Amino acid sequence: MLRGSLNFVTVVILALTGSAVGVAALAGAPAWVCLILALLGTYLSASPRIINEWERGVLLRLGRFHRVVESGIVWIFPGVDAFAAIIDMRIRSTSFSAEKTLTKDTVPVDVDAVLFWVVTNAQRAVLEVEQFRQTVSWAAQTTLRDVIGKTELVRMMSDRQSLDDELQKIIDAKTSDWGVTVQSVEIRDVRLPGALEDAMSRKAQADREKEARVILAQSELLVAEQMELASHVYRQNPVAMQLRAMNMTYEAVKENGALMVVPSGMVEATNLGMLGMASAAFRSNGRED
Image (cartoon, rainbow, N blue to C red):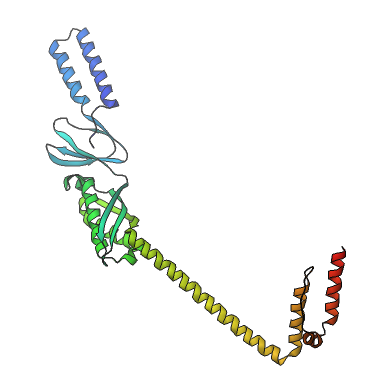
């Protein structure tokens, strides 16, 4: 982007030129002297340029490349020197996309990505490429389409980091000759056809349901194995069985108003008669209260 020649230094030179011409006229100087002063001041006022800190200017002299101008005040020869362009050297971001592009497994996808790049050589960016900004954008878009065509959908959805790195290397190889360095590429979004998204969603739900049923079956198997071990212990140790029965009875009658029917054989085997009487007394006391 070229900037106009009007700046603070130019204004100061024009003001000094006007003052000098006025003083010369008041002093009775010839008209040609005033004219020369005016022309010289006007010429000098067109000489200074101001380049910002983040910019570099590509200066041409008589149509040929002269030098790259750093930031600050720059004096040129008007009519002899000219700026081909003033380049912004800061990091830039460019969005690009690939629509309805087929993956390696023939799935149409829409991909949006962003490119982060910077001009590292202002001379090449201006002299080697016409409209380097648009050229970088087109190079990124074509590279994205090529990479999508060589990549399967599963990898594109699950391994974006490797795709970002691959895109960055390929695009940077193309733009390095233009004085442009690609710092990174990030894929922002991968959009699939609606029917395919529904099918993938149903498949994912089915996989989760299958996994849940497998876990439930494994849990039941573990429970059955433990119960089998417990049955062996109870079979070999009747006292443990009686203690287990007493615990079950206690858990059943500990709540207020609970009622449990215990077979007489179980009562005789575990000596639960006193426990049943205590439970009945407990219920009767609760009703009286």
